[in-house]
Length: 483
Image (cartoon, rainbow, N blue to C red; front, top):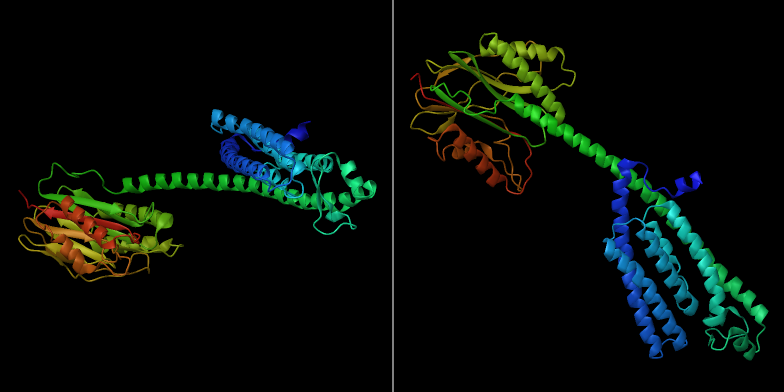
């Protein structure tokens, strides 16, 4: 008994129960539409027989139609009462369809030879091998019974009997024996001929369909389990990525205003990743009361590996910067540390600048990163074409050079990653440095937050329907002077 229940078990565990229930509810909906279609066909057949197109006795056809409509009404009514949300509805719907198909087979045997295939195929949609086997056994039994009934009360195809001309059909009105004897045929021989040439070939075809349906049911069952497992893994991965995104976002300054007590400068940063997590990062922090460090970096690659490399690089840069030293010395130290254990062969481009808050002097070094952009008070934003060193993580022992510039009152500094100039539209056209400068100069006197917002909107309008290919990371600092 336990093995029998296991055979008919559909879901493997409570975790998959809901998945299979949803599948069965969808299959119930399909069964409803099949029953609706069969009801329409039954009514049409009744009408055609009434006007004389079919040769079935009208009384029998009327009884068939009324019985069929009653049988179909039961699953239809139950479906709407329970909104198709009961798992036992499949037994009512498919077995009702089986009964009606058997009725049709009994009276229209010559015209609906393989109608018994329909409920078997429909049962496979529920993805329960046990249910399909049960319906298949019932279909064979009902077909055998219908074959007996049809030669007694239905239309008999006598093509199976060699003495009659091809296409000869007789309508049994007063019983098969009387009709056959009236034609001078041997009833026993006719019965054997119909069994061998009629019932057995149909049974063979039905058997083939049964095996196909059982395979579909089993394969569908396994497919649902596999898809559920994939969905669970995907949901788990998505949850992990969401957590990684939160961790990554928390790694960069994201509370603004960042230093409300400092009136000498205003700084704002933003990061928009192309994937859930990315490799770009920006950073700014006070080394002491007089010095502000600014970092803009872009890790090679995307996704989780780039994000992990980004976090390691950020921590190394910030920790080493707080220890003191010039930007070139800091980048050399970070480069050697990363190269010593860079098994993934990744690298990161970095611009590092240290602002003297009192004087506006900036000492900076560039490790393969984009040119910074400076705006002098009353002027427009322009590229500052500094000297580039080699990227961090590319080769140990690299040397970097410092350079200096001074920010005066109301000057601004804009830092970014290559995701902005290399943003492309559906025509594969690059946004470029010229458009970037134009976006910055829409309102050069605006606050840093508004400047970044203008940039994002211009890139968005340019890209249009194209996918965001790379991370967009920006930082803007406006220097107000030592007030």
